[in-house]
Picture 1 (cartoon, one colour):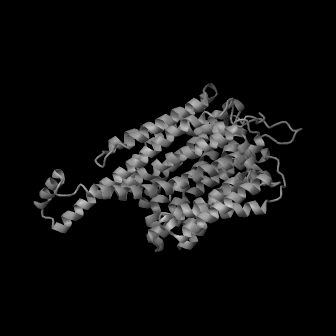
Picture 2: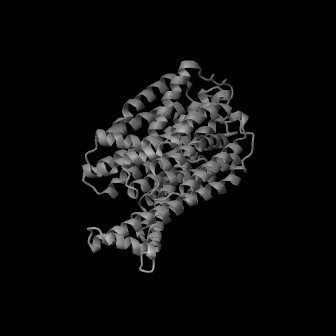
Picture 3: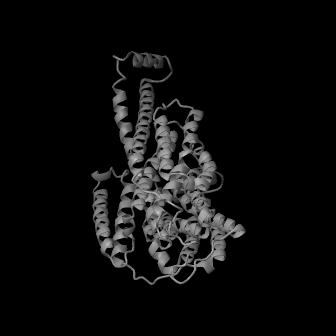
Length: 517
């Protein structure tokens, strides 16, 4: 790890077996942390039933984790400077393991929510520092590979989360979605400490920015809680959601003003003075908004409208990881030969085309037809994540990589949270709109509707059952048209992002351009 004193020569990068072991340990710890954001999703009905609460209360297990994790991510840089990057990372992994065990042992919903809050807080710095440790341990010429491997764990984990969560819940019981973290976390922590404890970064006893910390916790806390619960409370029709929104806006506005002038800011906003960091993070956040929106609505539509089980919805979503997994190492090896803006442009074009492709499906679409665009979409994933990580880190000194990674991860997580809230709400509202529009066609003046109603009259269904069936069909088609609208809007957003990425300026170099190797 590059030592930040002026007179000390930087430590040599790792090679051979130690480098392979470190890569495995760090990749698995990142995979585990990101996985835990989605693995619980499919288990919520089981958890709610087991602990005797409603399904909407069960979703607190998801929101409490993302809330605590979102607050801790921007603090990564400050914590790493105060305690050292290696020590912070290993402590974060071990806290994650301990609190995972507590979550699995929970016997009531309050106990589980507290466990998930602590688990999220403990894991906050883990993803950002995993990238920092990988980059500083790899030789300069192979940092593209390190970035590719890291990006793949972040991308593939949310795809495997629902599949693994569904399988563990169906075949064992819900606590196992937490217990599975124990062996992985312990292995990752032990290997990382063994290999890197003598390569600790220089620490600084910077005083804590108490005002900035309070504003961050209050602002992000209110924002995340609002996003997670807005849909259940009909958004700003609810005094609670309105209050949370206003509080979040005031706290985050004051946070920005305070941190710009603070002597020892808890969140380093000066990074946004770097053109490439700003362009890279905005592109990553908005791209993630559209990408995550598709990944949230697609399995929901399959399960609630087309009658897929959780496992089959997971299997229909999974092919997106195949090409991503195969192409990432190839892209990582050849990054230095490519104009990264062209690579990201290609990714946005593929995302836009596949999103538009999805917007053309009707409710009769077969499993095979749905899988093909998911498979093709996988081609864009490494071309999106890997170059953008390289772009926002380009030119930054080693001492700022942890802060930059933490801040970028925060905005990526926020993009995902906002996307979930917006796309699910928009889907439901558009579904209601299309239901009302389609109902107008179920009238005596429409020959097709009249013919279908006559066919139903020859069945054994009663009049009320026939009306119920027609309403069910109209509802299904309405929600399908609504999901088409979401995919179409995502396609437009991807196209709009293409010119924006060209505001970044080469050279992009190796990630963390000024890192001393």
